[in-house]
Image (cartoon, rainbow, N blue to C red):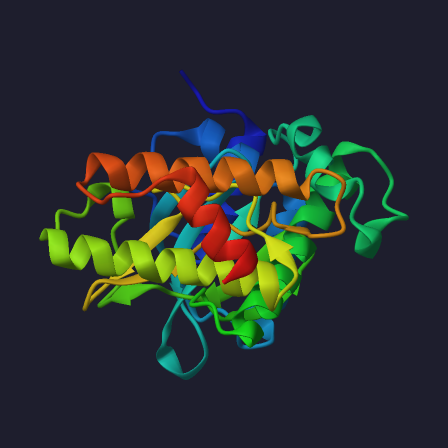
Length: 258
């Protein structure tokens, strides 16, 4: 089937940006991610020196795609692009409504998605300043977030769910994650709201890194306690399967009273 002019136009622009598709035949993905406004944003960031060359796709999430790239000082960076055309913006509204930082946001798809991107940038800065290991955010422009690449030699660190460790290392990772949750809650005044083995990477040395924090809410959010209980339940469930004696009650006590 002959691709239409819009797809050819997008593919030509992606080629100029030296984007290498791991699945070059998936034109629909290119359309959903790289609309004209996003391409203009990438050009703008490239002209400012934040992007020197694109690499391949790292992950495809519910609301965004992440790519590796070469940034300033020839260092690997991660570029997270929130999809506007295909994002389920209604599913993320509950994480924005009730956050006093974004009270005047219009409740349409475009503004909700752009706010979610800005929110992740602010959340990353907030919890990183408090002492939680998260990717360092570098710049946010429209729906494009550039941040620290977690991994080595352009190979991303694995998700917690895919890492096999000795029980001693597993306990260490568990304790560190609970400590991060405590710091986030007590010092950064925040709840991750979507924490699980899918949103934690493991660096060398069994060091956990918290990612995907765009849905994080302040403790003042009306649903923050409900989100915290869900995060705690996810962590307890995962580590119980890995042999760690963890209960929701113990984790919650450590986070809120530790």
